[in-house]
Image (cartoon, rainbow, N blue to C red; front, side, top):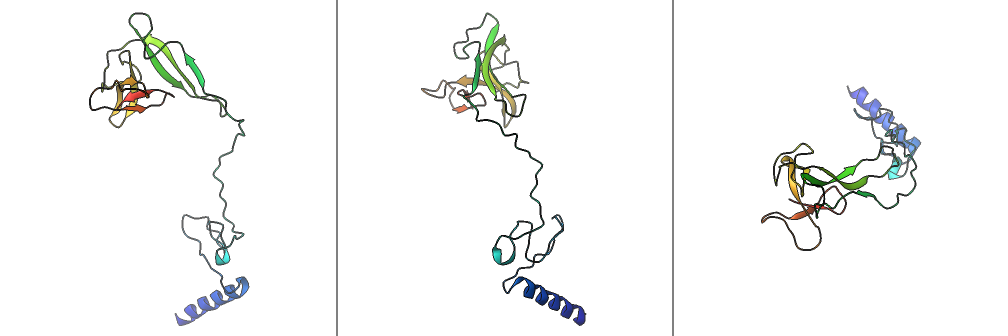
Length: 174
């Protein structure tokens, strides 16, 4: 056992001589890249805290599509969600449409659709809310929440506050 300990110290001294007096030896750990060498670690820093030539790769698989700068948000409002100016038995509902390509933009808008009955706090599945309400993911599941204007006086019921939601420029009573 003593000779094994002595050989380990001898190997450590030899590595220090190769890498300089301030060398740091970082052993490979499980879950890492496993290719550790004297003076390097998976963070890419080597002896004495300087930049090292470590063998670890920081590849995440993400490839930047190189998109041009995005312009102003795309808006598609067929109706006014606050005025509720749709035909009878319909409500004006806000939406966000996700882009179909990596460099695309979200589309924010509102469209007329059959009105539901759900009011503040009623469960919903993307539809079923009354005119002037929207189905929103909350900490208590999907619920109908009343739309509110972010600026000016709040039209929210007592105990609720107008907070920004997913559709740019719109708020919901939460």
